[in-house]
Length: 350
Length: 127
Length: 150
Image (tube, rainbow over all chains, first blue to last red; front, side, top):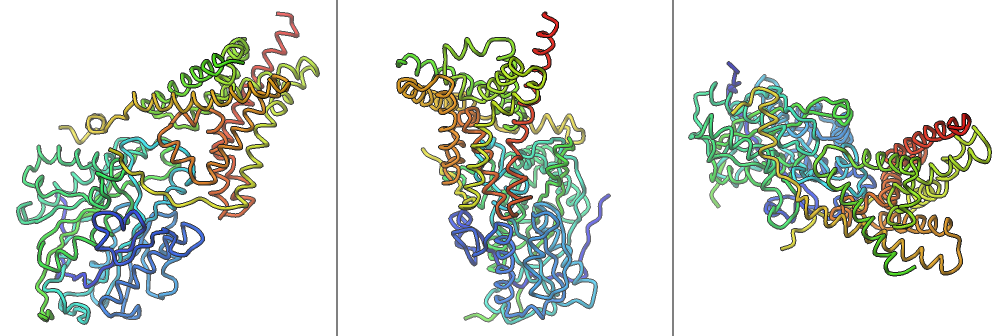
């Protein structure tokens, strides 16, 4: 039996920000983004630096929203898609915040929020930040082909999002209050379950959603087996970037094993872009997808009280170019966090 | 040179491209592997004596696809062996392919001095 | 539904993965691939009519296609065409040229020696290597058959 970690007291996400590129700004959630750079470059000379700068900007915005300075943040948990998490390293040196770098491929967002809330529960730390970035062109260069290479993407391929999500977390009973007066609710992490490695069975880097879907199945089934909750207690069960292929596998399997969960399912990879107008094939991918959808769409709805309980699972496809060339199949992982909207005692009706 | 030649080149080039497209869509072979296969296939075609007659009929329809590059290498090897003996095995290929390879590399180098890759849009779906 | 074995997962994945529109893709590849070759043949006719030798004309055609493809790559248009053309732009020498130029301009940020210098060969290197290797094998066979008068 897998275990759910219930936090001694909920850890609030007191502020969040989403920053993205042109395509993300033009998508259905574009209005929820705090900053869009239509050039995707964020004023930098390389795409790798652009990703770092995007993360830096996102963290600054999130800090400003809760009227905190970087000195108030005790620890930051950050990750991205670049080798050795170098985008986070390049983004964060100027802040001087103690850093834990994480790599969970596209599951990084959930993983970093999970770790940050666990750290806050342990005692002396009061405030933590979580930061996740991915950049389409930096990822393309690293994982696939040069940006101008003329290749054809199969219909199962996904489009790596140029997006960053930053989150400031704090113990719910010691809210960094200032920025939080304007919303009736504060989203908070109540409990979480760490993901298990599940073999995705395939070696096709252009079908990651399918490879990750089994990890999502595993985590969702395990979560509801181990917890007192039923899918009925949740407004949404949000997966990270399964895309249309992975989502349809997840739906089909859950229809057989946990039918109650099926109507609650939604996938960040399916909502970031307007899939009727843009040819993204199977949907969005990259760790920025779930981070930016959470920050630009899900958390704002929770703050207004439109959603009360959300099970959030970013799904990660763990692989490298050389492991694929050496014939290893993709491993999937899907950590889950239970977000719950708690009443904001500092709310001031205007 | 007539319209017939152009039509024949069109048909041959199209046939080769759409055959390779089947491999792209139906197998896991990457474009790089397909290019390697095509160039080696060109050498093979020349070696068995099939390339020259095909070229007589289809012209650029077989010389412009990468098969033609393979055939050029093979012919270079053959001619070098005919004129210089065993050493031609080593010198013929690169000598014959030199124009294409060097030109490509020099242009690539030149353009890399001039600028870098651009951002990409997600293509729109046309209805 | 078997989600616990490799075979079961593979079966589920293949049931859910969309298929490429093979017919349409083949048609586009045919039109683009054929078009490039027909353009080349037209040029070759022009060169021949100008009295240029047959071998040189064929070579010139390939060189012009290399230059055009590299330029279109540099302008950021090649990938947009290739998205439709697929094998139609890959199979003619344009695919080779695109592979070289796209790598070169992409690796520029990593410097000119181990960036551009090394990575320019990432995709074209295998083509050159195995083209030459096939040529050497053919050369050995050709030489030996000539030597022994087979």
